[in-house]
Length: 323
Ligand code: HEC
Ligand SMILES: [Cu+2]
Image: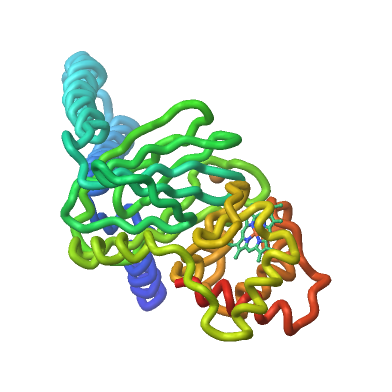
């Protein structure tokens, strides 16, 4: 029994850490929310235990051993809740204000548009043009970053539990959020508003980099896709166009410019595909192309299951080479 309890406690505590945990904050925004969570949880527990103890006492004690009935009602029933709730409300106003306060001049703006069921991402530096990516967000540590989110279809919710609270992604409206990520690392975000069949597979990786590394990364992302270095990769690229992938995807540096699906210019350099669903490698890319509808039913990309194996491998290898 004791062993079981200890094991349960260890498992529960272990679940608090990790790349998608509101209990393991990596930014002031998330830390503020966590502190409030603990205050409510511990305070609520203490009050609950106190009220239950009083209730038991009231039942078992004889009336003459329970003096001051009136002052219990006024003190416990009116004064205590009014004082406690007023203090909490004031704290809450302050918290809400801090959470929505935008940095005066963010070092980077990241625009994110929710689609059923993936994320279109644009980076903008002050004075710079937009740089498009998808399903992965890279930001510098220690610098203020502003997110501007909206939706292309239904209401989604943009949530990076380790870094900030949720904000709704609403069609036709831009919601904003400022954060300063404190430490480099890989975090995970997730859509937090039910948005259809594949809501659960609408996630993304968040990579927080040291500022110098981030600058190098961003400069590198501006590069268009390189020309294929090997005949197999060239074959993969040609097949990409022969099968009409460009009708939904963009690969900068090629004639593919469509915005219906995720930008694939640097897809091979991203940690995952299918909106945070599968680790990126030649195998998962080939699997996705051949059976997107099997891996993520009803997503907006058809399965291309009519290709011969060699063509499929070449296409996957080309995409994987787009780092
Ligand atoms: C009808 C539009 C359409 C066509 C045609 C299409 N795709 Fe897609 N593709 C999508 C959409 C939409 C997604 C996002 C799916 C999701 O995760 O919900 C996607 C996702 C992907 C991804 C994963 C990207 C990521 O960052 O998660 C890859 C890789 C991909 N497509 C490759 C291809 C290839 C190769 C072809 C041609 C054989 C192709 N697509 C044809 C619409 C399309
Ligand atoms: Cu969603």
